[in-house]
Image (cartoon, rainbow, N blue to C red; front, side, top):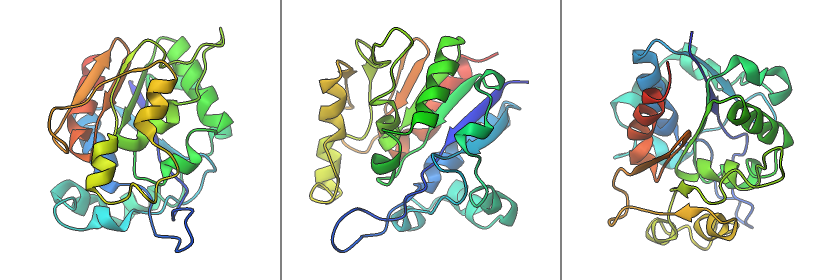
Length: 228
């Protein structure tokens, strides 16, 4: 049985004076989940602290609140999965074939410096598994190092939410850092689509990344293509 480990946030607001709400971008999880479910993969959800994962309010509005997201949101069993996410310490990375980091601006706060997530990512990668992210999920790869001390992303092709997209989404003054630039600072070969907000996914060997919420399905399909 092929097994996927999804990563979601525990953060529910920006760290700004008005504490603007944020959280998991639901369609990024639901679209990927749908793809993996169609392949018969077993799926688990983990978060940096375990427990509840709040939803980004904007992901529950048109046009982001599509059929896939609505189906998840209206299913009590699916929503319960987001109230009871696993803690990294409860996960044996040798059980998983891939780790998939979902997004939402919230992950910019709790993904990068989570020792548990870094450990899971490193071990899944070094076991020959797939490491994947969509949108801001790539913040979870910023500080992950391999056993030899090098950053996982150094010298590898990567995409994720672009700074241009932050500006167009009018959150460039709210976000804690420029994720695109931070990726480049770590030696990643960052790339993006010619137009903002269109689906764009990159596979560099076993590292698969998607640029924005609209890229979740394509990213998951590229992950599935690498798995047995």
